[in-house]
Image 1: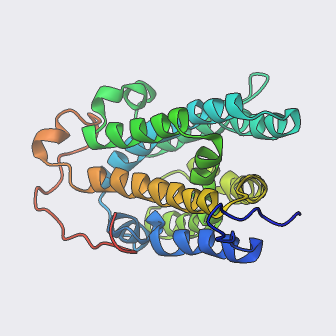
Image 2 (image 1 turned 135 degrees about the horizontal axis):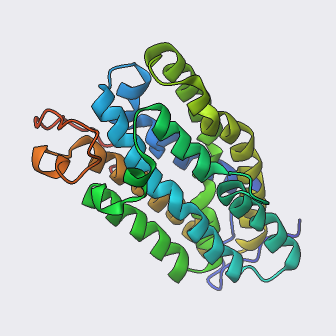
Length: 265
């Protein structure tokens, strides 16, 4: 790899190792595994209603992942980069009639007692979830492709989260059919592969300090999107619950105290 270009004012870009560490530091401090809702999930403290509400809300996010990946795909100039990124859309949408990640998430919903049509009905998702997802898709539509790719680097921490989640579901939520956990199992390897590909693209494209700082900021933004999504799931009140998944009972309306991680969300 050639040396990164200096800024016009003489400021040098970070060396690749330092830049990589700064990116990894973002997910260590701000990834949504630290959110109180995820922590309660992993301790086995969620009620069936809360878990179903999360599954439904997260499906709204999952169904839009191929959309944001298509936007990134359209902005990549080199055929080899497009071919590699196209694999992500295949992973989610499936190929040749085989179900991908979206189908596996639908099966998770069914294993938890949710109906597919309810999952596809976006009007049942808390407004905060819809807003967070729309903000992420719009970010990938409007920002330079470097920023959009960098935002995907939450995948650096995803494999560990998937392992933790599998263990938590198997231990604490045995009422969910283990076959429904196929999405999590698949993402352990897919997430590691996708993170490696995206990191290589970011390191190659971020040649100046300004570009590197933009990449770090993009990753921080994505962490905030994931955090905001969980905020919306965790704080939905009784009135909101009437528009949520019908199978989900209204949660306790008491607001839980939330903590800010890494300087806030």
